[in-house]
Amino acid sequence: MLINFFGDAEGFFRCPSCHKKNVVPPMRLTRQVNAAAREADRAQKAYERGLHLEAKEKQRLYVESRSADANFQAEQLQDFIAQLETVLSQTLSVDDYVAFESLKEPVDVEPFDPRGLDVPEAPPAPLQLPPEPTGLASRVPGAKERHARAVADVTARYEQASADWTEGEQRRKEALAAARRKYEETAAKKQAEAEPRNAEIEARRADFEAGKPDAIVWYFSEVLQTRAYPSGFPHQFRMAFVPESKQLVVEVELPNYDIVPEVASYKYVKAGDAIEPTKRPVTQRKALYASLIAQITLRTLHELFEADRMAKLETIVFNGYVETTDKATGHAVKPHLVTVRTSRDVFTAIDLSKVDPAVCLKGLNASVSRSPAELTPVRPILEFSMVDPRFVQETDVLSTLDERPNLMELTPGEFENLITNLFEKMGLETKLTQASRDGGVDCVAYDPRPIFGGKVVIQAKRYKNTVGVSAVRDLFGTMQNEGASKGILVTTSGYGKAAFEFAEGKPMELLSGSNLLYLLEEHAGIQAKIEVPDDWVDPVFDS
Image (cartoon, rainbow, N blue to C red):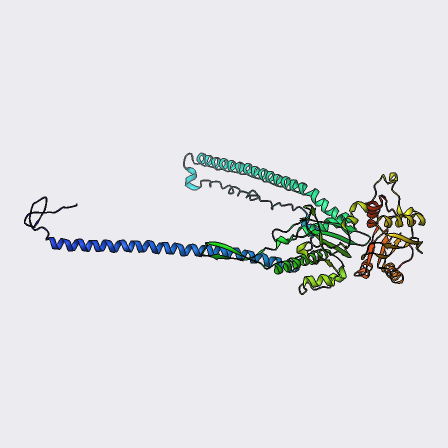
């Protein structure tokens, strides 16, 4: 309740309700008011200080939160960089073999659960009849009748319980049989659904073991599809298999230069209340990208050779390219940044855990872009289009209607004219040709291009079996005798790994039958085929 006081003429304060004097002396009331005012002022200042402290705490927490955000972004960035730096090492502890069984569709059927239906109910207790009355009890009037009724009642109850038990057991057995039938039907349905896929896998396995090109390509495609790369990496690749040489040609899309972040880190700047990036030095970014290209190349070769437990591959050609836009023309381009051919024996002898990826590629005589960041291209060791599967497929039942010339049925003169015509169409000037001792073609031609041109020795051999290293040595000897700058060996079959290893690092091109068919169609407009007659016998050569 609020009480007001009023002063009178004598200077006393009177209570408005009782009009008594001297209720509160004036000086005493002033001191109380002043004390209350001071307390109110103190409380107000304390409240204002509290608000100020609360604002400071909020600001401190806000700065802490923003700094944590910046640190989190920086950590994410560093983790991604670490992934780029360890692309090769990440796969070395992983078995890249893909078991055929793992490719099958699993038949996921849990064990049959009878849900208690397999447990029979306990049968009724054995029948126990009431004992007949004896002695004096048997002489009581009606005792025998009462006993007979009791026996009949007990027997009736037992028979009813037995009948109920038998009926219940029949129902249980029927329910158990129905549940088992339903389970078996479900299992059979799942098995039937998985059967086509699993039968296909078994057929693929058989074809793979037989060395069929389609199955070889399919299996090693499965190997590459299972690999895990950091986010942002492309997953496109294509491959072809040359059975004569046991050579797998793989063309893989590489990540573009922008996969390496331009930002080196992040920091929170309190003055501007902003999370600001710090730039990565260009030299560091280019070096990391070049290392990444080398790591992907070695990793792919490793994955393929490690998965090849049945030794279906002798050599692998790896071509790595990027999909990008030519800044000068605006057109889409696919420059190759790396290309390498290596054999199983050479590559598996390398300890990848201790190599410098770029130096390792150099040791494998790989051709690597001088500046991957600027997309400086390299010429692939073997163009993928030259091993297009359509050039090596088996002919179908209508092959008798195929009017394409069979290279194996041409006369030596026709074969020579065909080969010389091909290389003239490709820009070489044929000056001298002669029949070779093995029924093929020996040709000395000239590449008229300045700087890159010069004398070229071409040898073409119609063989059924794999061409051995001796033919490659002979070509190299002829190149030296002729003072040629380049040698080209063409065959209707393929080459062994020793042939490729001898030619490695030398100015020599080894073209297989599928390569020859491609070049004839691409440059001379001739659609040919290679079908070896049953009675064909190759010249004697070192395989």
